[in-house]
Amino acid sequence: MIQNDNRLFKFPKFNDLIIYEDDNLIVINKPPFIASLDEREGGEVNILRLAKRYYGDAQICHRLDKDTSGVLLIAKNPETYRLVSIEFEKRRVNKVYHAIIQGTHTFDNLTVDLPILNQGNKNVSIDRANGKQAETIFNSIRYFKHFTLVECRPITGRMHQIRIHLATQHAAIVGDSMYRGKPVFLSQIKRRGFTMSKDEEELPIMKRFALHSKSVAFTIDGKSYAFDAEYPKDFATLLKQLEKFDT
Image 1 (cartoon, rainbow, N blue to C red):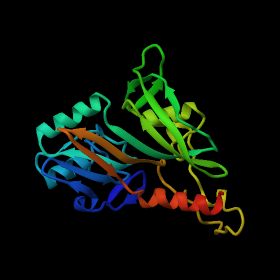
Image 2 (image 1 turned 30 degrees about the horizontal axis):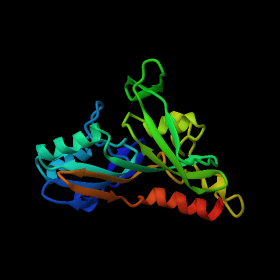
Image 3 (image 1 turned 135 degrees about the vertical axis):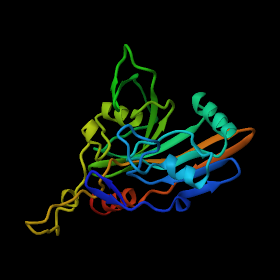
Image 4 (image 1 turned 90 degrees about the horizontal axis):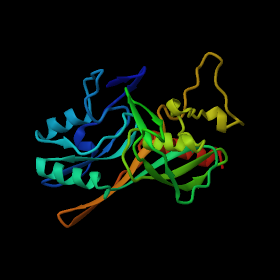
């Protein structure tokens, strides 16, 4: 079990996370609430350590925020790590994320090109003078009364890029408190027939921000790869509740 902000999360076996493996590459569907790499504040469990227990030479090719789920690439040797890193560096990796955002927003190939400044300690800001180029393309997938399911295609790979770019559009990701996103409670969308005792504290439907790395596609050594990760249970549950009570 992993303790995280007073939440207990049972981490599955690493083997159960694997969606693809060959002699050079491991691809997993990363669960939420676990870091990709070692964090400054420590922590006993992260994807890199688990991957190295599974395969000693494993290296993480990119990273996802601790609360972000989805496709994560792991190289099994230095040469594959180098080749995949080059594809990321040259922006030839096609990355698609899905996010549930607050409000109804019609994004039709909306390009947000706002520079991001990394201020350290996981703090970033939009800074036109000193920030590094950051570009994300957004498309709305599904509309609800008060929320929208959005496809996010980051062209660059800055820290918190999707999260802060959505916030600039007044479309914060559900549950992303760092960027003024609010959690969704069942009582909020199911106004009729919702009851609970006075002594019971209602918990949000999803206990993290609603961002999922849906797919990754790239080519190395003439071979094309494309991977898709199913929604984890919490993301799927929130969508199901919105489809039932917020349409």
